[in-house]
Every structure is written in C-alpha cells, then in structure tokens.
Image (cartoon, rainbow, N blue to C red):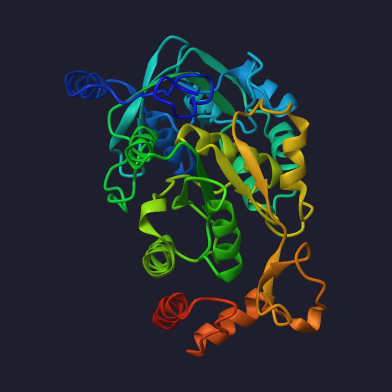
Length: 388
C-alpha cells in the first residue's frame, strides 16, 4: 500500500509527464524548429495515458530491450510485469532524418503540439513478432493486428515531456487522471475499489457481475474506454448516456464513480486484460473484473483465456486482484440473474439475445426484454439507432 493507504502505483510511483506552464512555453517555442511527427490515433491515446501516469512506470515510449522483453515474457527489461508494447513508430524515411539524442515534436492530426520526445533509441519495429506474441495471431483481419501492420517500420524510444495531453478532449467532467481518482477514493473513505472496464452499454448481465463485485469492495469505478474502437462498436457519447442513466437509477452514488479511460482498444484478448488491470491499479483500484471474452474479438481467443492468463504470474505479483466471472443471464426458474454456478436451469429457461437480434429490435424501436436490459438504457440506444 502507498503512504496514504491507497494501493501503490505499478512500479511504486505514479508518473506525471506533464510539464509546468513555464516549461510548456519554452518547449512550444523550441518545437517550432524540431522534426514534427504526427501521431496516429492509438499513439495519441497512449501519449495521454503516459502523461498522467495511467501507464506507470513508463516515462515514455519503449526502447528496444523493453519491446522485446514485453513481447517475449510479458515483462519490462527490469522484470516488472507489463503485457503490451507501447511504441512510437515512424517510416524509415522519417527515421533517417532523426539522430539519437535529438528531440522531436509529437503532434496530433491537426499539427497541434502534444509533447516532445527525446530520442534515445531507434530500432526496427518487429511487427510480426508483436502480432504473434502480443495478439496471438498475424491475421490482418484482426483489428489490433491491422493497426500494428499500419505503423512505421522504425520505433523511436525515449522519455516524454508532455505539453498538452489532448486538445479539445471529450467528457471533461469524467476525464479524471489517476491522481484525481485516487483523491476521490480517499475522500470517500474507500480502502478497496473494483474497476469495470467496458466498451459496450451495461446490460443486466454486466450489472449483475459489477454489483456482485461491489458487495466485496468499498467502491466501484465504472471505467469505460472512450478512445479509438473498431467500426460497428457503439459510439462513446451514446454509451456515456447509458452509463449515466444506469448509475443514477440503479446504483448508490456513495459507492460508485464514473470516469472515462481515454485509451484506444487493442482487442488483444488475454494480454489486454492484464494491461487493463495494471492501468486500473494505477488509478487506485485494488480489484478488477475479468469477464467472459474480455477484450476479445471474433474467434481469436478462448472464452475464458483472459482469466487464465493471470495464473501465469505469481500470486500478488501484479498487485491487483482479478475477479473472474462467468457468463450471466436472467434465469426464468430462479426469477433472477444467475450463472451456471448458481442455477441448474436449461437453455430454454434463460433469457438470451444475440447481438444481431438486439440491434434489429432497437432499429425497429422495440425495447429488448427488461430481463436483458434496463428500459432507460434501451430507450437511449433506440434513439441513437433511429437517428443513425
């Protein structure tokens, strides 16, 4: 535990890479003469997370030793657990004009300065290895692998100084840094907190497992991902309306907190589950919910692979406790939410709807059964679907 009684950040120290106002002015002036690198969407998200300490202990984009250690062993070169490469990549032509020791300006897609990277390393981006090790597949149809293959062939490693983590950020009310959520938890008197990662609206099955988790902790942080996702996923602004109405009507505000996680989805299944857990540890959470097919996509991962991967670390090594949940559903026999652990009912006594069926009902202005989703959530999704 940290000196304030909260769980320690990963690596022991919460990183802050955002410079002071005085240094910001100096960097902005100096950056005018630097090589400018436009970061793709995922790297823009990573920079914001690095800047506020969400990815502690990282203090910049990974160097070569860390890249290979993470791919091969799910650890940084110093042995600390870390599951996914966090890199800044450029083309060979751009890399040729950059020397080790040089500072480069990192910008968003509107050429606005985000920060300055001191290039301490240049190394070949082994995309095939990253795909095989981190994603478990080299299939370009995998959305996360497709992003890797679209990146540059040379990685630039080194420490970051961040001037503006994000220009024109969305959800400013909920865009809390790890330092802010930790302060909130302490103010509320929470010694334990469970995080729920989501990129979808919360339906009754999700509600059931997060309330179960809340029963054994002091507080719950609903922490939806609002960065880049794949085509077909429900937009973040629509999801946020769903979270707000659900928490307002069906949860105790004293024991819940809603904050957004401005990350890009990698869809890396098991390895991303570890990343999601370690990041929430940095936000001050002691427990992390791992459900069915966590961070998965298509048929690339087994249903509960994301739970089993936690067993590859020594007990307590990650510093955050995973809470594993099976698929849950409304059981007609029990007249309540249940799982295979808590009911012996057959499939015919369970309320189950496919994603296709749910989308069809919403598009037609029909609410799915109340046993599947809360009516307030359904109405928001119907409105968004019909507007689309």
